[in-house]
Length: 224
Image (cartoon, rainbow, N blue to C red; front, side, top):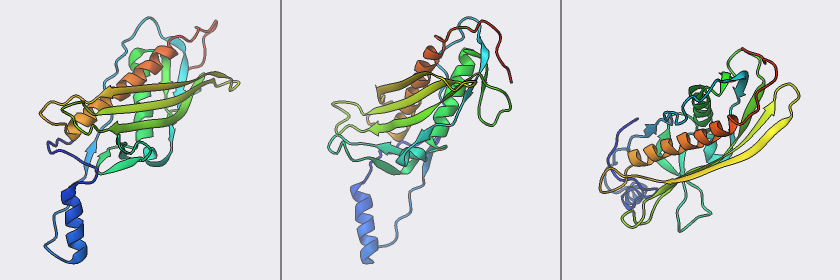
């Protein structure tokens, strides 16, 4: 993760002024601020518990709409809750759907829910298919972080189906919202990225707990 300590804003007054000067031909060119890329790869929360289900789970790539389908970090302000915006120079290292699907795979493997957990690139026959959509994954900046911290929020809509007959076993929505914890006097992009990683870990943990409730098959199922 790239470290940065400067405060961040969606549209800063200084940036707007520089753009105006450039448009009018006044002043010298200001150096462009480098893009900052953050990883979304938290450590799993759930630990192994009991023996794994003797079956194979395939975690498909997740879908997403709009900005959530890419690497932009999305935010929404209290003053304009219907306006979805994105930071210009704060980005994820990988597209959000890909990173969150990878988190689900890692969490399921770490918790040893199934004998095998696959991704689409793996060769193998799955007994269960997990897929869905990233509905929400956004920063909610506070107007005054001294009064109330900023927050991050996420929602995953997931469907689990049996691979043999495509019968849906459940269709569930997972939502979390947590505060951004600052390590200094003011919140920084690093603080926001850490909160997003905690959020991703908690969402994956919720999914793992539901997967553990699947009934054990009466006969061994397929492996890769």
